Structures are given as C-alpha cells and as structure tokens.
Amino acid sequence: MPSPCRATNQALSSSTREGNMPAADIMETTNSGVLDDLEPREVLRFFEVLTSIPRGSGNEEQVATWVVDFARSCGLEAFKDDLHCVLVRKPGQGGLENAEPLILHGHLDMVCEKAEGVEFDFVNQPLSLVVDGEYISAAGTSLGADNGIGVSYILALLESKDIPHPPLEAVLTAMEEKGKVGAGQFDVAQLTGRRMIDFNWITDEEILAGCSGDVTFTVDVPGEFERTPDALTTARSLEVRGLNGGHCEFDIQLERANALQVLARAVHRLAATYDLRIATPFGGAQNSAIPADASAVIVFEDIHLDSIEALIAELDAALKSEYQISDPAIRVELKDAHRPDIAFSHAAGLRLMSVLRLIPHGVVSWNLHVPGRVETSNNVGTLRPTPEGARVMSTVTSALTSRKHELIERVQALVALAGGGVVCELYGLDAPEFPYRPQSELLRTASEAYRDVLGTEPNVEVSQCSLELGMFSRRVPVSDIISIGTELQALHSSAERVNHKSVERVWPLIKAVVSRLG
Image (cartoon, rainbow, N blue to C red; front, side):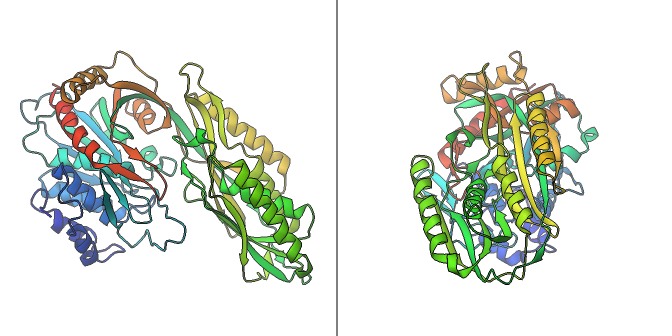
C-alpha cells in the first residue's frame, strides 16, 4: 500500500507502540491491500488503515495518536486532548490562503457489533475487510464506516497538495456513539472557523441541512443481592437471539423488536407462575444501537423445568408471528447454565424487568412539519450487571429539546413509582438539534457543486437523526453547517457496509465544494 505523506506507515507503527495491538500485527493488516484496486485510492487507503486500528467508543487512544502522528508527518499542527479528540490545522492553498477558515468534522469511534456466533476482540483485533461487488463490509462484525469513511475524506484533504481549499480546522471527536461525550468536552476556544462541513451522513443522494438532538440517560436498579434459595436447584440461561438490531435513529421506525424488552417480557411471563430468581442480566451492544440480543440466568425448582420450557416455546412462537416482517429470525430459548450462588432478590429482579418493559422504546411522536419523519424516539439500548445491581442505558432523539426533556421526566416519574432505590440520571451531553437554515451559504455552494459534479439536483434533508452539529452551532458558535454523506447500510450492526462506488462519486464533490469556498 502506498504511504500517504511521507510517514503513514511509520506513524502507524509509532502510534501503536504503546497500544493494545502489536504494531507488527496492524502493519500486516494495513499492508494487506484488500482495497488496493478500488478508487479513490487517496481516500480508501486511509479507510483501510482505520479498520486496522481498534477504535470502539472509549478506546480511541490508538487511532487518535496515529492521526496526530500522521498529521505532524505532513508538517501540520495537530493536538490530542485527554479524551482523545483530535484537532489538526492546515493552511489554505490554491489561492484560498486568506479565505475564512473551514471546520471539517467527523468522529473517530465506531459501534462494535458482531454477528451471532462470531468470536471477536474489538479491543485488540483489526477488522477483516470483505469486498463484494460495490460494497465493502467486515467479516462477521460492524465495519466502522460510520464514521471511518468521513474521517478518511478529512485525512485525504489534509494530505492533499493540489486541492484548493481555505484554511482547515479538522475536528475528529471521540465517544460520539456514547452520548457525544468527546464533543461535549472539546475545547472549542481553539477554533476560529464559523462554518463547518460534517461528513457523518449516510447517503450521497442528499445534502443534510438540519438534524435532531439527543440525550442519553441511565437507570440504575439495585440488585438487593441474596443467596439463591436452596429449593431453586435448576439454572438456565434465558436468551433472546436472532434480531436485526440496527441504528437507534435511522431504523427506529421499522418496528424491530428490542431484545431487552423481549427478555423482560419472558421473565415476567415466567414469574407470574413460578418462583424464580435472576442473575447476570446482559444485553445490547451500545446505547446508539437497537439491542439485538439479551440474556439472563434464571433459577427455579427442577420440577417446573418441562412446563417452563413449554411456556418459553409458546412465547417464541408468538414472537415469530408478531415480528414476522421486522424480525423474522427472532427466537427465545433456554440453554444450560451454571447455578449462581448469589442472585437478585425476587422483588429486585421483577423491579428491573418492570423498568425495562415500561421505559418507552421506539417512535414516541412523528414530525408534523416534515411528514414521514420521526420527531421524537427513544432507544432502550443496553443492560449491564453492576456491583450494585444492573444499569440500563437509553438514548432519546428529538427535533425538539422540550420533547426530549418531557420524555425523560416521564421516565423519572416511572422510576419514582418503581421505588427500591432505582435512580435515573443523564449521561454524557444533552446535544441540541441543529435547525434547517434555508439561506445557508454552504448549502448553496454545495448544491451548485453537486449539480456540476454529479449532474443532478441534490435533495436537501432535515433528518430525524442526531449528529454533533447542534453542539457546534451553540458552543463555537458555528453559524453555517452542512453534512455530506456516502451510501452506508445497516449501520451499528454486523451487516454494516459502505458502497465504494459512492465514495468514488462523493470525493470529486467534496473537492469541488472546498475549492469554491473563497
């Protein structure tokens, strides 16, 4: 693989010297050349490097260090903060040296999801790329094209010597997928630009000119742990599997099943008839992904095993009927499990499952101003055991800040009724929406370039999704923002893929847009 600038491979080696993956392993993957025959090479070689570096949310140190090393090898100013957000500055070129600065934005982290039955260590292993026709995917795992492709465009612009562009301030944030934590703490006083192009969009058929905001909250449920009663001798792992999952915003209206709520439904069905306890509840990959799997160990009297198996089989059949369109492969099953010595108390276990069932999930309201668009939704995303009990993490997305807060107030009312020490708290940043601005100069320039380069009129989208645009518009403040995207599919799932022909179409568009920003 050719090396961007003079030291991409050297930078990759040095940046991972202190990381979790040996540099030699990353180098071998980086030089594997899976994407060598695809265009545009100057973009996709960066993407291949990014897929070689583990970068799940909260694990961005290696990739941030690599980006800083790469930028400095190109003679650019580059900095990394304590949360591993990166800022790179590049002077203008090609006659635009004295133009107003332009902020370029993407996020370094990815959602780590794997297919059922796949063993994969997202902290230490590089992704394994697969090219199938027009699409690039990863074998058995999510791809990280969200937002690896966007970051690759930015890196290609930073490397370029012949693309006219204004002075650039590239902001690559961390933990975007976990409540936009990095952007919330990024020192915006470093930025002089007041216009921004974001590359965190999912299609090349439109230009994004407005988006929703979001806020994440946690619900902590005490376990009131006790010794498992001696009479409860049989343990089984109650598992929900085979769901499609998907993105908490783009797919939320598809009526897919939520594995956590299906698990809670199953436990409640059993608890209505049998004395049982639960232990080690677990489910979901990340708060920004619709949970595709969930499990908990249940303990009960052995004499009830046959009837419990029959009840679960009955529920499984009902779910297959209910979700035959949106989640046809859904299944609920019992598997052998080690009997735990300690479990949730009976009351605490039912309290946890009740909270899971009652937190609103899915579309809460539709946008009456933009027909066909979701206004407010909530994704009950993850369930994790904690030393004190269990934690549920959920993300609300809305075009209206007041609607977000109203929904959280409803959850807080639910928590108050649940009692038992259950606590609901905000997590990360309360990200505001970015409203559509018809008079945007960036939108006008990008639309003209789109027509000239791609030969068609772009759609202008105001989306139900939540990006970091609203945060920058208020904190910097950036007054003019758009987002340019690439065709991505099945985001936040193991089926995630990117259309490399779309990358080939979008790259000339990006070059045309930045060259017109004088």
